[in-house]
Amino acid sequence: MTRVAAVDCGTNSIRLLVADADPATGELTDLDRRMTIVRLGQGVDRTGRLAPEALERTFAACREYAEVVKAHGAERLRFVATSASRDADNRDDFVRGVLDILGVEPEVISGDQEAEFSFTGATKELTGRADLDKPYLVVDIGGGSTEFVVGEDHVRAARSVDVGCVRMTERHLVRDGAVTDPPTAEQVAAMRADIEAALDLAGRTVPLGEARTLVGLAGSVTTVSAIAQELPEYDSAAIHHSRVSRDRVREITDWLLASTHAERAAVASMHPGRVDVIAAGALVLLAIMERTGAEEVVVSEHDILDGIAWSIA
Image 1 (cartoon, rainbow, N blue to C red):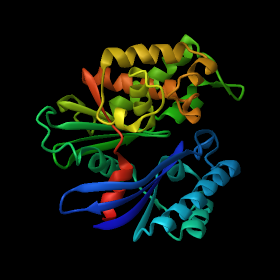
Image 2 (image 1 turned 45 degrees about the vertical axis):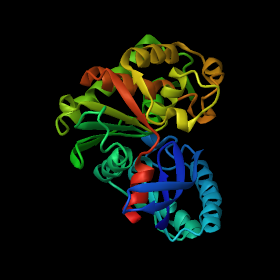
Image 3 (image 1 turned 180 degrees about the vertical axis):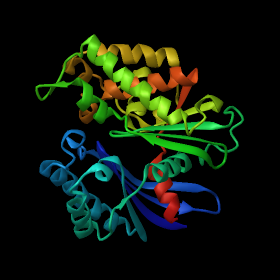
């Protein structure tokens, strides 16, 4: 048994997992799993730089996580940074800050590496499930990018494309510095066209139509599941391995795109940091389901974070 700590720093959120990993049994036992919305990717698509206030929010979360890692006595720590820090001109400022706080240098991984970790984290515990056919298509809808991975027990093909809930919101739904509430039909159509173009790009590398089971990861997907189940609060246990039909995803997406900020914020299971970006994330999920013909999505709470943990176990 090895006690490990994994940090996944994405465009919208930073997450920590401290767990005991047993490679012999394939079991990962959570000791602490937490998430903080830091919006590191704020404005990156427009400016090409990480905003000072976004860096400070991220560093504040890192200081909190350093205390948790120390308290649990983790033997190994790996910090992985994804889309926003790949794109930024001033990513060296980010690297130095993380190194000073946590004592490890963040690994700014490629989209392909991101996909590998996501696939491992999402599918390791699905092995042997008779009710889920292979190959799997794992889709990780992040803030800045979405990863597509097809495989059986191992990755067969993977591709990362630059559509995520934050990037799509900032690119298509923001006018005069504020999110349009609700967006116009023209804004939604432009966003949908962008997503469809990204699916065309992903399909050149990943055989999207060959998948028999769609597995969806990350906050946009888990939040859609929470809404579908009408949960009184966000409940990871109820969300993990839940299934949501394509019709239900379409119904929820239509509502989100027509709703106001106040209406979305009133959803009991909605994290405050997702209120303005969830509609874009749900539309990405719906477009994927329509493109692949998936009748349902299997929702996983285990994702890239778990894959990172396994990589150092």
